Length: 459
Ligand code: ZN
Picture 1 (cartoon, rainbow, N blue to C red):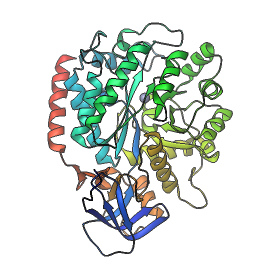
Picture 2 (cartoon, helix red, strand yellow):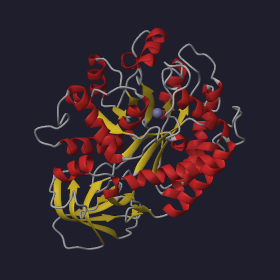
Picture 3 (cartoon, protein in one colour):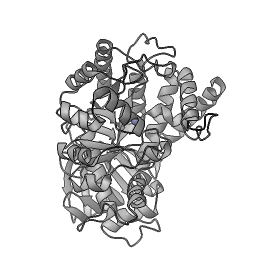
Picture 4 (cartoon, protein in one colour):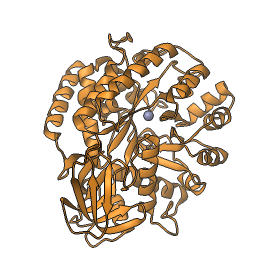
């Protein structure tokens, strides 16, 4: 697997670990890793204008993409703004078949690649048949996610989710949750099977584990997930909404982040998703662990979760990455922009996360690249020899990028542009997006349309 393929990407400008460089040639090996990075060299191989390390999308529930735009009404109960979202979700959960899951996942992964993400952490909790009985193959739906990744070429960190209860009081799973549930023993089996199935993918694929949240697992379930993870990624939803914080506080005796930091050795392979509801002490405590906060600003806006305290968290040295979570809209530049704008709206200020050295766009982008790679357990995150070639190219002829230099390129892309500026993407050396389109886009879109037509008939 380590023979040289000779694929070379030549960039007029590239963002390297030491900063911006010109006339850079990146040589990619057959194993998808970067063999060499040469600066100030003559043009060779495929030429692009602006080359960046491509971030990973650290949090996704693929199937929710199919519900996008369908839950913007209220029910009869005036205080219950989640009503339509929950109703739609339950109806979907009764209708989704394995082939639907695979077609939706392929479409979602394709959109992520076209947006500039090279990899995804799929927080996978849909395990069983409608009605809750397991499939003959316990890891059937994990295999569908893996099959989609084989098709799209995205770098997959697969995170099977352990989901035991319907709430902190350990109530049984509700009708809408019965496809998610396992006891700890069956979950361990499922995790093992998913890990075996993942071997069908190229060697950059990673297996992790995801205890769903402090609402859905007990002490033993969480402990078992920690053991299963070892040094691999461990992801968990944490402190997303105020009612959740109150529920956890009542049942576990402390606020969610406070409890976790007091009872577990939270290390750098941990990724805590959301953390929108933290006290100042929790914000500082989490920042000190070296774990990654998995921020999903578009989904958090969509669900009205609240605003992550990015200013104090980054000020305390906290690491973060971004995820598209509900996939209501998959847009890398917009995810970063929303993160920054939420801080500005709360604090009535500008350039919230910028530092003396780096602009807002640069801080957001560097953070998402490094944190994404760390959270996904993926040896990427920089254009550097030995790392996986997760790369994205921006269209230097786009009006807003013309004549821009250095960090202003990132600022223009994130604040004035959108993902249409992304022209090429490589995931561990796989050239999956060319000229702005996924190389199998037409077939994947056609299959998704057919799947959605069939689903609409069955809802
Ligand atoms: Zn989530």
